[in-house]
Length: 274
Image 1 (cartoon, rainbow, N blue to C red):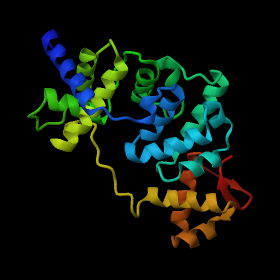
Image 2 (cartoon, rainbow, N blue to C red):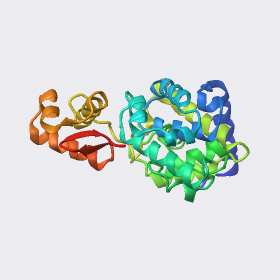
Image 3 (tube, rainbow, N blue to C red):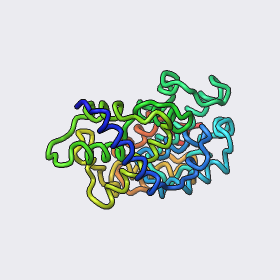
Image 4 (cartoon, one colour):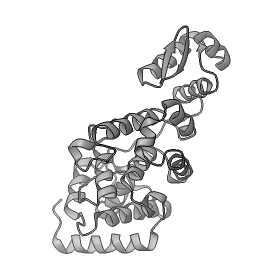
């Protein structure tokens, strides 16, 4: 879809006006320290803002700089991360911090090519970091942004909108005078649309429904992580007994945790990875 300049200008005006009306204060908006942006973006993956804010505050208190985070033990980080879910992100965060500290002298990279090499940083997260940390005019897309574009340009659709179609619109309409404010506005407008009209993101071909946590494999992984944070060195049979699960399932869960670098074997037992 090729947009005229008039349509682009009107759309930018609407989004920026809505963004000003709906602006939400967040600690990583009030202070756009690049470390804060990297930390918040990894925390916000698949997690709502209201859950992230208190954890973010705890992290920057415990680890004021990315070098402090890099030098901490993974066990310290994972213990503090507890409650956010998707514990692999804590591993990605720690490994990324170590790389930034060792390869970039503690300075968050300013190029897409460098950011994309960091663990847990995909194309859209890299774009978000460039925008929010460095105010660079680069396109990226996520759920709230999709909502705005589908609501505006495909309001009556009953079909799944292809990601490349939305990405083209994001590029065409990018407000380059102040990209950081532009994306804040898109995000807040998207949240408003989902709350007051409907979740147009459901019409994206990228839309997925998050599986139920209760009783899931993911919940059992988190349960084992909590056990090992409380008592290091537990043997597999002891873990299975505490969980009231079969040895076979317990072995499978532990193997997945080892594979993701969250847990390691030590003697006959298991502990959180160093």
